[in-house]
Each structure stands twice: as structure tokens, then as C-alpha cells.
Image (cartoon, rainbow, N blue to C red; front, side, top):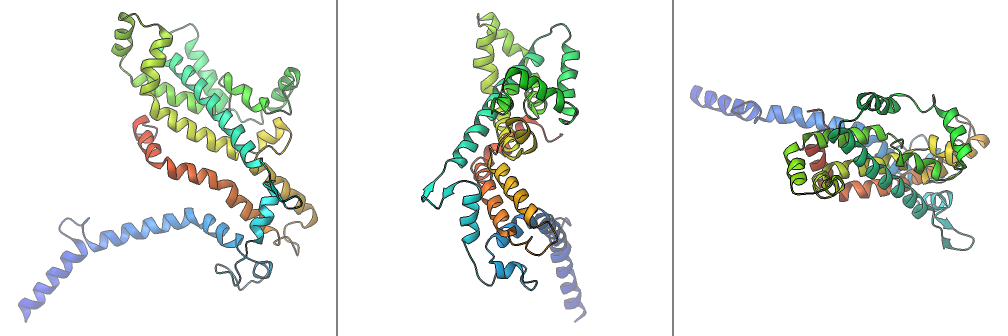
Length: 317
């Protein structure tokens, strides 16, 4: 009996703690508990947004209903399509606010990605007077908050005649002053610094000019950086509301349309008053629609995105 008990105890210990501890059940339980806890923290807003967007008005004002709606309704999404100017119920026609937002964000992303690659290559490849000072100025554009330079920037855009147009957001991208563009330039700069100079020198010996070296050697090698910068810039331009509304002066993107609807409703029903929660489901449904393109892009390019993060080494390794 004593031998069986000892054998059972030994087997149980091996199951719980494994041969090397990290292959035991106890270690896996701790790891999965932590992973599920962190996942819940990140997924809670999306779960709450999804569940609430399907709730009826009766469920919204009922304190007993939290996660499971008694009646699932799609009316919030119908209202959200109207709020986002994607559907006109009077004429039963679909509007182009989604495509206009995508077009504007895509143009801005392509511009800042292209110019960031050129500027990053210039800083990494060439030595020229005041290079270090210019590099510090470039980094300072990211450190300084936009509120500091807001007044002078508006004056410059007004004198150029581009204020209240999408060019107020697109034109700075041509000169390395786009939204968070210092980060993109830094990503390209770090990547181009890792390319052996022997590659450039061999191309120069074969008679290739600087433009051809950049186009035929540097750019194809920089595909991981291009993927990262294009994705980051697309997400940041899509979600940006303060600068876009300040410089373009209208509801150019879907997040701005949501902000405009929420602000107008808040004037009628301020937060904390009866009725304030009635439009919550519509706002959350609109938010869900507005982030769908970003989720689709991420899931489609997830493999390339994670590989590019690894290759560019922007994880801090």
C-alpha cells in the first residue's frame, strides 16, 4: 500500500510540476490564467461595444440587463449608418462617406510612407553639413505637442490658402511633417543603417546612380519597414480627430462624424441626465462600424505585420 501511495504521489507531482516545471500543469494554469486576464482587459471594450450596440432602448435603461440583451435589435446600426452618412433613408441611397474617408486616409498614408523612406534613406546613407542638427530638429517635431505649434501652423496654412481643405493634412507629409512622421523616418533610418555599405558600393562600381540604388536595392530590402509604416500611418490618420477637424474644418472622416453626433446629442441630454444613455447604443454601433476596416486590414495583413515588426526590430530588442 505504501508503495502504491508513493507511486501515486510521485505521478501526481509529475503531472502538476512536470519534468522541468514549465511543462507541468501548474505552470500552464498560471500562464493561461495570466493570458486570459490580459486578454479580457484588452477585449472588454470591444465586447461591451458589441453587446451594447445590439441592445434595445428598454434594455439600455434596465439596470438588470448588462451583457445579454433580452431583445436583439439592428435599429442601432440603421441609425449608425445615417449618423455616418453612409445611408440616406429618405431616398434609400448609399452615400460615399466610407470611401471618401478611406481615400483621404490612403492618400495621406502613401504620401508619408514615400517621403519617410526618402528622408530616412538620406539620413542613413549620406553625410552633409548640419546633419546632426537637422536630425535633432526632426525628432523635436515629434516631442513637441501639436498644441504648441497650433496657432503658427494655422497662420501658415491660411497664408498658403490650404486651410479648411484636405491639403492641410496632406501637404505636410511631403516635407516630413505629417502625423507622427518623425517615428516613420526613424524606422526607415534605423533599417537603412543595417544594410551593409558594401551593397551600395558594389552598385556604384557597376555604374548605378544614387536614385537607381535607392529604387533597386534599398527599397526592395525595406519592404518590412514599408508595411509597418503604411499600417501605422493608416491607423493614426483614420483615428485622428482633433487636428483633422482643426485644419480641414469639416467632418471629413467617420470618427469625426461620430464626434459631431455625440456632441450635438450631449447638448440636448448632458451626461448624467435622463435620456443621456439612449444614444449610447447608436454611438457604439457607429464606433463598431468605423473600426471594422482597421480590424479587416489587421487580420488580412497580420502575418506580414508581425514578420515586419520582427525584421525591423522596433520591439526594442
